[in-house]
Image 1 (cartoon, rainbow, N blue to C red):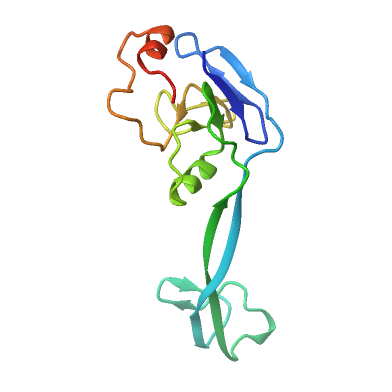
Image 2 (tube, helix red, strand yellow):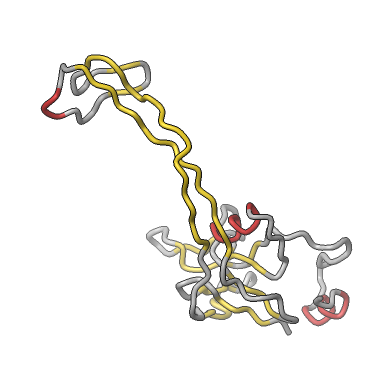
Length: 173
C-alpha cells in the first residue's frame, strides 16, 4: 500500500469522498520542503513622471500617497525582478512513497523541469472535490491530491477499481 510523507509545514487532513468524514491526518515531517528563491533585478520602469498631487489620476493610475512633496516635479521608478525557484532537499523517489508538498512548491518543481509523479499536493481547487472548507471558508483539508507529473500510458485508474486492483495493474517504479 502506498505511503504518503507530508513535507508541508502543517498537517494535511484527507477526507473520504463518500461520507465527507476525515480519513487520515498526515502530520508534517521535518524538514518541510520549500523552494529556494533567487532574485535578479532585470529592469526599472518609470511608473509616473511629471507634476502630481495626491488624488491625481493618470489614465488608469491614481496617486494615492504622495505626502509632503505634492505638486513638485517627480519621477518614480518601479523595479522589475526575475525570480527563479530552485528545488533543494526533495527526497529521492522510493518505491511506495508519495511526497506531499504545497501547490506552489509543486508548480515550482514543474517550472524547474522536475517532473516526478511521486510528488503531489492537496487538491484545493474549486469544484465538488476541491478543498474541504470550514464554516468560515478556510481550507481545512482535501479529498484528493494533484500531480503535475506525467504518468505513462495505461497508468490511470479505471472506474470502480479497488486500491488493490489498481496497485496490481500499476506497479510503482
